[in-house]
Image (cartoon, rainbow, N blue to C red; front, top):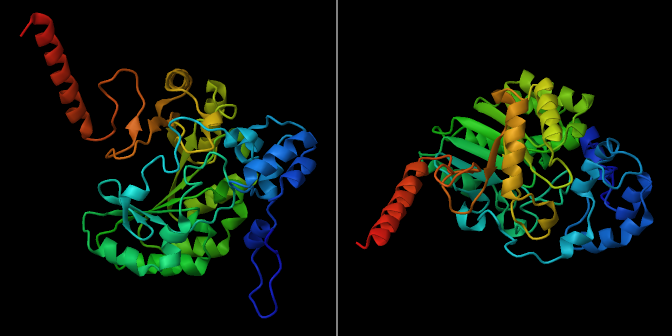
Length: 370
């Protein structure tokens, strides 16, 4: 565990840094704090050797004591199922490495580029699609910002920069300021999008220093948080969201559909209502990215579609997140919808439809003997 105290001569750690340093990293301690069966500890240690446990204590405090099926606990407790081999589950399920445009810069989609700022996170989600990502070689922080900025400067088609990781808010306010000061010199960049779990799992990060940094960024600002269950959203999370909105950020949420965590229409509807009460708009509901170690969270597409239909019947349209899957090499997220002719969220819809029409014409010709 990282020490929570500062060395002599070093700046005093901020509250969020102390909370981060005090995160639980020992499965035995997590089980003891929650009064769980000690039999869970040994398999958790085995899985944690592949992908370590890390969870802030404030997030643990929202879990139900003595409940091994608590939906927040299931997202963070290492499990034996992670060690089971699963067909079609890989180390790079969304094709990140094939999209590298510079060290720490991914360019998958038209008009947008993603900066892998750091490999550090406040929490290690067991379903993380980058749990095997080679941050030592691909983190922009390790390479310095200049290769990223130079690549962005060279491509005037890029209008939006996405800060991701890891979690970009793991960086100090000073590091973030250095990066955004550099970005402001790229005249064709208009929007800054930040993908972060901090406002949900460690809301102390949204402090005066962070808000001051974000307020002075002149770009349009979008903060995409990540909550999967309404129990994650407490008063401190709502306050953090309100503070981000107050400095000009638009707040969206993306969730992952996870077996045992949120795979019911009632749970998903309650999450959407809780998000909107916190002034956050539901954005995406992702099917699980097929990363090694996470197959036990998978919800099949037919079940996902049924849940989404039920959710649509329960809620007004603006509270229904788009059900999507990320497919390596596609030009956009892929909408998960019934029927084979309307799956992509991009202009590739027409191309796919034309391809299916050609197949249908061939089938007719074969049946007619042509």
